[in-house]
Image (cartoon, rainbow, N blue to C red):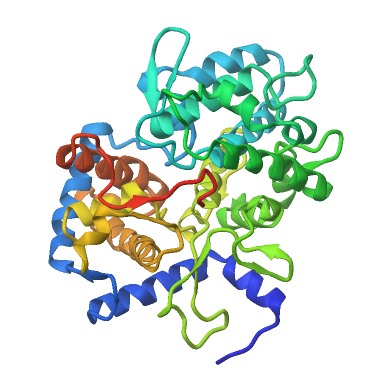
Amino acid sequence: MNEAPGSEVLALLRRPETIRARCHALLALAERDGLPHFTFHPARLPAAADYVAETIRQNYPDLRIPYHARWRHFAAGGVDRWGMLVARLAGEDAASVARRRFDLCVVSVLLDAGAGPGWRFTEPDGTRLGRSEGLGVASLHAFAAGLFSSDPADPLRVDADALAALDGAKLGRAFQHAPDNPLEGLEGRAALMRNLGAALRRAPALFGGTPPRPGGLFDHLRAQAGPEGLPAAAILAVLLEGLAPVWPARLSLEGENLGDVWHHPLAAPEGPAPGLVPFHKLSQWLSYSLAEVLEEAGLPVTGLDALTGLPEYRNGGLLLDLGVLALRDPALARQTLPAGHPAIVEWRALTVALLDRLAELVRARLGLDAAALPLARVLEGGSWAAGRRIARAMRADGAPPLTLASDGTVF
């Protein structure tokens, strides 16, 4: 086994190249029928690509597909809620607005772990939203009300002082948590917000210091940009460095929480970091979301496909529901599995690898290349939407085919 210093292993596990390589290595085992929990049926992949391409044409007939970003949820139901909110910022320059968008996006994405099937958020006009759309809109309303700001005179921001004081009761009120409307993992979400406050204070070089806020990342990233723009991988690297204290204390190395990194017995057996599979799903989704802000502020983002597809239940559910993947033990579909269960890790790894293959097939069907249809658009158009669509067709409640236990901190 190859040994490497801890700091090198930590850096390795934060690289998108490592995510992709380890996931594709597990897919290669699946092609040899060598995985313990799933079988792979490649003959069904073309039909899955047809289904995704059809979904894209339904959702975006002109093929002008935005990124798979948090901003889509803020516009649930065709309502431009961010546009209405930004009207309160008339007169601010583009950089100031971008900092506020970073503020909102970071807290909103970190609050996005599964809400549970029964929870809904009701807007003042009576609109009721659940799942990711509900969580996104709830976080936007909380941001607009100043929940995440310590300065009543400047409510539309997020800062460390307000986050440090955020408890489950405050967050529960903002998200309409109640016995008849339970939000899964409420205390875990509040703890994440407090952890975020600590992370902001720990890294003033990234987040600024008067006060430290997620929006400080905008200035840090802008300073890193070259003549052609900013590589997407640089966004992810800064997020994984700056937000490391936020992740729950599961696996750690040299005192750093690894975050969305999990054990699988067949992953990289020769090392370094044998048996570990990184995903960094929410960090990558946040990277896509912040890339949109940077570009709209005039800073091009390059190399978007250096990041990977997102290993979450809609993309993975699509592959299961369309028979590209199948469980060896169907009983697992009737259980609620923890995020660290080897079957969940295996499912997520196969999802990452197969999204690369699916993207190539979808591009061919739509007559677009990777520059016109990067993964961030395939996901949005796309595999995530198709996963939700097939779930609704197959199950009355639209639930995924595998159930993951959520405590509000699953990344």
